[in-house]
Amino acid sequence: MKRLFWDIETSPNICFSWRTGFKINLTPDNIIHERAIICVCYKWEGNKKVHCIKWDQGDDTQLIKDFAVIAEQADELVAHNGDKFDVKWFNGRNLIHGLPSLPDYKTFDTLYWSRRLFNFNSHSLDYLSQILLGSRKIKVDYSLWKRICLDNDPRAMADMVKYCKRDVTLLEGVYNKIISYCKVKTHIGVLHGDERWTCPVCGSGDVFKSKSRVTTKGMQQHQMQCKGCGKYYTISNLVFKQYASYKLTR
Image (cartoon, rainbow, N blue to C red; front, side, top):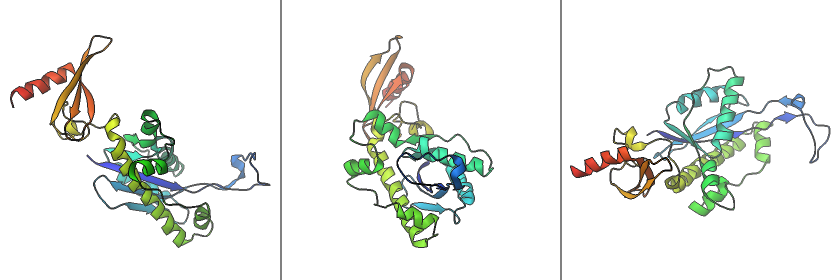
């Protein structure tokens, strides 16, 4: 299983504005410099090293090309708010540059699952990291973006990369905390060539039936639990018969 954790940092549009305020309407005609991706940081599951690809003084063309090659190697891409932000940003910049179309990535969005499953005070990565991991994001302010976008400050870029890499590390930690509650996108057991009744999260065959259910359509299902990672999951009656047959031979 090649699971990729990733995060991007983006620049703001640079615009003309006659005045400032809370109710100012700016149209795309006000843009004098289009926003772009400053950097993308990523790590493979189980590896300690966090990698980074940076733009070339405001040009993210090569960044898009390089990360597309990396992302295509992944079985699953994990990001916080990735489905609505990171993936769309990446697709948009790819299209603007006229690059070949990207594949339909299999993604896992930790923000989506946090909002769906838990009644937390907040679902931000910073808050989830604090309550689940005892860690926080690196504190930065808007001046960091100004120094990068307007001054091309190398020290500011180094701080941005450090900030983004920290987010990727926290992302993996949050993912590991919540995954046992979520519906998995990739069945690890089947990916490893094992049977469908094995644990979809860790691939273990050391599982047992927790209870049986019958749907409104009269279909029998069985809730299983993994003794290794504790994941609960449901299999059909046909798959359960395969599990039962296997257990009889042990």
